[in-house]
Image: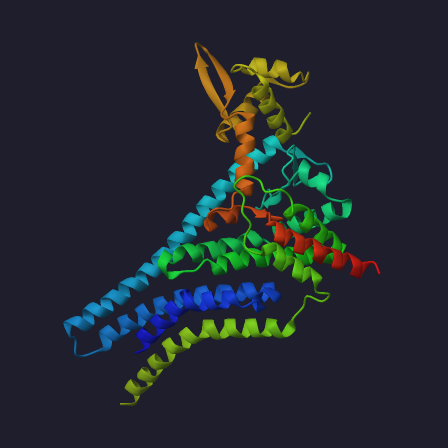
Amino acid sequence: MTPLLLGLIGLALALPVPALLARTAWPMLVPRAGIVLWQSFALAAVLAISGAALSTALWLVTHDELTWWRVALHLTIMAIGVLVWARFWWAAWTVYRETQARRRRQRALVDLLGEADGMAPALRILQEQTPIAYCVPGIASPRIVVSQGTIARLSADEYAAVLEHERAHVRRRHDLVLEAFTVLHRAFPRFLRTDAPLVQSQIMVELLADDVARRSFGEAPVAGALVALAGSPTPAGALGVGGAASVRMSRLQQTDPRHPWASVAAYAISAVVLIAPTVLLAVPWMLHAWHTLRT
Amino acid sequence: MPRLGELERSVMNVLWDAPAPLTVREVLDALGERDLAYTTVMTVLDRLGTKQMVRRERDGRAFHYAPALTRDAATSELLHAALDEAGTDRTAALVHFARTVDPDEAKALRAALDEIVARESP
């Protein structure tokens, strides 16, 4: 019974539950706790599915009567569990490799095409009218890239807020958060996942970087930069992540963006979701052991 | 003495501006830095080679260096990577400040900005 239950929990956490959560707006109120919440769902799904495989293995060796269909069924579940772990580690490895290679290439191009700025060692300015502002994160040599088009469109305050926003991404290693979500996204087969955790986490790290920028410069420069850059003419082939700018703007409109109750709720749900599969796995096993010792 | 990163930029610009592949000596002359050593330029070209930005061609007994991609190609690759948002798996490398929005959303953003500005300066 336990393996089946765990398997169902795992599948539920992989697809329908995140899809439902993505329809609600409240995790966006608390980006940090929201990231933990999303992460815990995906991790719990991996734990539950592999836990299902583990408990099946235990059940197989402890059960007396073995019929062929039971063995076949449980071997299948076991294989799924192994596959989940294999995919997880494979995804982690490939995401790491690809990200490293892409960043090295970006850094090389940026260093050759962009001009260094005396004010900040990581800053590179591109002679380009398309407004862009982004960062290439990294431990040793991060880069913050802005174009002339960006500088031309922003006031001094807004420009400073943009740089602070990008520095926050670099300093707080938001790239690691996104990488973790990318790994979990890739670890699940296409028919068993939603884009929701990845898309939502991308917006949440923007919210966190906005929070840092507004603490230094106030809401108006961050909001002004958002309008100036997001409202610019569309470069060919560029599409927006649905509603990210609106979500960020509505957070900037809140005079106090802290929502302690939503935070507590998100952390509490994360804890339950992570602990439940473990308890489901451990309790019957301990009861069984206790029973065996008594007789 | 310019820093290595700046030198790489200057050398690359020399190669981009040149009509044909250049030898180390030609690059050194084009740079016009009096106290720059021949071996330094060679090192820089070597580094650019490992970064796959420069191609080395053998012409008789001399080596000639050419850019592996044109300046325009490099720029468009950079912009493409920075602006390309197709495929959710690709976003991990870069974190953007803002993405473009449709006109309706832009209008709503502007209204919200006015509200924030009005609030801060009563």
